Image 1 (spheres, rainbow, N blue to C red):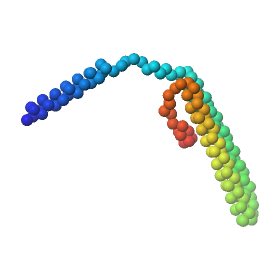
Image 2: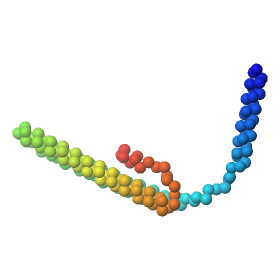
Image 3: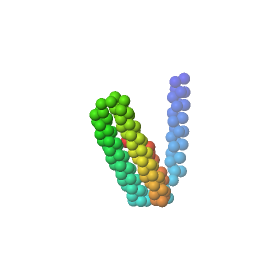
Image 4: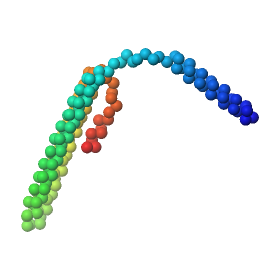
Length: 141
């Protein structure tokens, strides 16, 4: 029984290997007719990355400015003796900060998306296939 099983297994392995050899002989080794313009895509990537970096620099400067304004307003609020007026000033400082942060994030996302959309347009003009890069990665900055 074991001999029959081994013989059947060897026969199956032999038939599979014959199929692979036949397939390999039928496969074409001709190079792809699609030629990508690598220099063009590199230029598009450079343009995109520079735009994303600029957008992040702008976001960073806006965030720092919002933090500095919040600090200044909070310190001023804590100089107010009246508890109700102080609480109002503190809330105002935090609300202004949240508004500034939302605006900074909004501008960053618009700039980032614009850079990626322009990259897609430029890449298509280069007659290149999609690069497989994830535009959402920049959101984690």
